[in-house]
Amino acid sequence: MKHFSPDNFQNCTLGLLLGRAALLKDRIIDTHMEPYGITAAQFKVLIIMAQFEVDTPAELCRHLCIDSGSMTRMLDRLEQKNLLVRQRSEADRRQVRLVLTEEGQGLADQLPTIGAAAMNQLAGAITPQELLSLEHILKKILLAAGDTITVQRLGGK
Image (cartoon, rainbow, N blue to C red; front, side, top):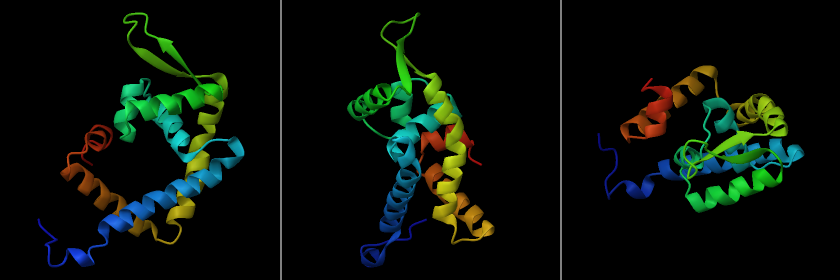
């Protein structure tokens, strides 16, 4: 279904609203993670590793839609903070596995509580039904656009 044309595109705010909401979400997560010395970007890496059992840099790149150079720098910072380690695969020395350290696992165990507080702050102005509708609409948009992570994780639901 086509909703936009060159004639009405100047009144289209969808992209702006989606982008601003994502930026605001990251700022809120930054605030909640500040006491732990972790950024929103680092929070995302840790929560994806913990919740989805993602353990390779390539898989993290796919989940976060970032390039391998940026991921390498991110993993360097998390390794310096003693939150994860890189381990060479025994079966294939070319492959690197990511493992949360004891400290990293301890922080990862707290991330659902911290993330819930951040998302409550972000979505606090809408009703539970509006939140369900928003999630449904966003999933529908992502699935229709062929977002492979959404398809894999949510199975089109």
